[in-house]
Length: 138
Image 1: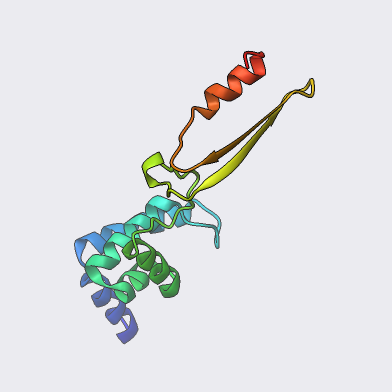
Image 2: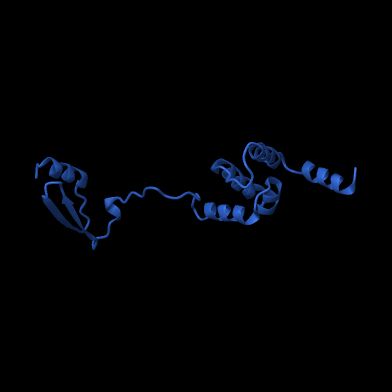
């Protein structure tokens, strides 16, 4: 066995159990998927978790990941982010400022129109009002 082969064997043997198990999991995933494809979120989450325990460089090398891609994901988690895009943000009425205002305009197919100008910390039931307007109850 050559010097390089021995060094590679020693390097693999020194991996902590968690990193070795993750390396095998990444390897199984890569065997069944095309090269240069995107890794699923669960594998990235695992890599981020392991980077917190074992460091960025060691984790990236063991799992065959780009150091800077892993670093961005770790930074996103550290900033309180999840790395995922937000689909919905709920704004509760208590969070509205006193000086806030908006105009809501509704128009149905027959040409009837409803315009509401809202100011302050008002939180009317807009869905209920829109439903009543469409049914002709306003």
